[in-house]
Image (cartoon, rainbow, N blue to C red; front, side, top):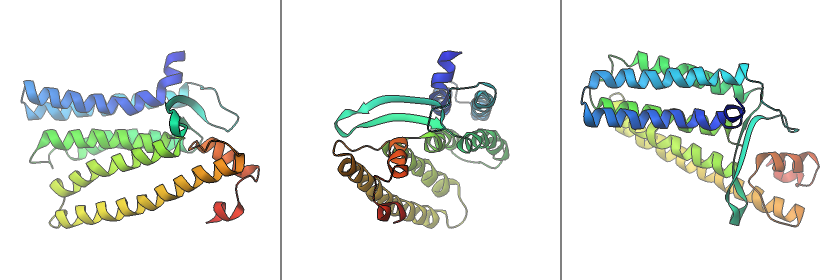
Length: 225
């Protein structure tokens, strides 16, 4: 159980990825599209059941108020880590996401009439990216998960959308991509502001940045900009 507690959030992110791989494998070897729906539903239901451990498994709570934390060094040159965790709000957002996904699969059971394999693969990858966004405690990792969520959304809208789906998909992608570039600028600015304030290396770690803000080490103008 200790292994599950330490890696629960990572498991939640990876289960849909494994589901997407299973869908692709099933489509490649068995080529029965009706079964693809059941494979997708199975993995989304499993992920929902796994997410319930967030309620029933009492993970250790850090001083910053986050539980089920996992921090693994990633790119040491820029001091960024694979750092995930949940607080009292994001915990329920994660469970809501995993709860909605099986409903999304069931609601599209007879609505998807073409390219079933691609649709359910993108749906599973979207779930993985969304969960990554909600649990990321490193701003760079958060940004990458956010950008990753745009790709399946673009194809889901562009291929299986309504009458103006191509226009909508392109408009969605351009607006969100440009908006996220501004967010990236802000993230990089926080990195250098932290480095200046601490007279050392910068960081993308949300917990460290939050502590610096609470301690008044980051400029008020930067906090309210």
